[in-house]
Amino acid sequence: MVPDDATTTVPTPPAAAPDASPAARELARVLDADGGPAPDALHTALEDALDEAVATDVATGVATEVATDVDAGRTARTAADDLLADWAGKVVAAYPRPSYPLASEWDASVQGLVRLVPLLPRFATAPLGLLDRFGAVTVGPERVGLDGTDVDWSRVVEIRTEPAWTCLSAAAFEADLARFVTFVPPVPGRGWLLRRVSELLMSLYLAVLPVGSGDDGADGAPLDALRTDPALTDGVGLLEHVVTSITYTRRWGQGEATVSVPSALLQLALPGTADAVVRTARQHGVTVTHVPAEGTSVGAVITRGETWRRTALDLRDDLTRRWRP
Image (cartoon, rainbow, N blue to C red; front, side):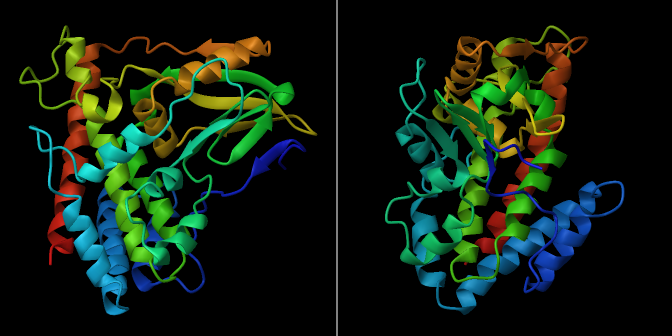
């Protein structure tokens, strides 16, 4: 049950819509497997479902606009070749950052960033609306929220922050991306939207993961190895703290809003977000707990990040080959 002053607008259900495509239904089945999704099965099912969604747009006549628009956004990459789409950096740069003290409510979401794509196709507006608040962060004088659960400050008990790497594993990234795929029903423009969401999230994800350091992640590796792509993250890396949970009172007991990979990436891509939440929480007398990464060296984080990066690059490269005309 959601408290009276909390609003949950878009959950992240593992189940696909009743009229979902075969690949989307298989992806939902993999997500809902007992014990959690198997990494290899999830990786393959996610690729198949995204490929099918784009192919369906091709079959229904959306293809020309999709191909022209995406190719135009693929012209520039970093020296490390780690960006899937140049447009992602542009919309992140254009998005306003929060600044404490907040005079009004500020929020960021995946759909809010995708809406900034130049010449947004008319057919994409309907499926985009379905993602309102999905992968979102909200903060303001009156309330705060993660991923669609917004709560009045008067009900907030605790704000917790943790280093970003604790919630950005490759398995978590693919599972959260898969939830976007299973949630959007088969409406016109679905393939365009899912391709854009995939490009955005993969671009933001790769931007915060370390490039191979050449030292096998040995202890004592420089902190700069975790600050990889200032074009998308202002140099913030995996050691930066993000808001990971909001504990609040409910009519009976307590509830908790927890961070997803997309909402963690938004906090890194839009510097000042976590700081605005923390400082506003303290202004309201809310307990703020910063969870340290005890017993984890910088080198160990680099090693994990490099492994996650290879998984994300495999996904990106496979989809690029599938989507190439």
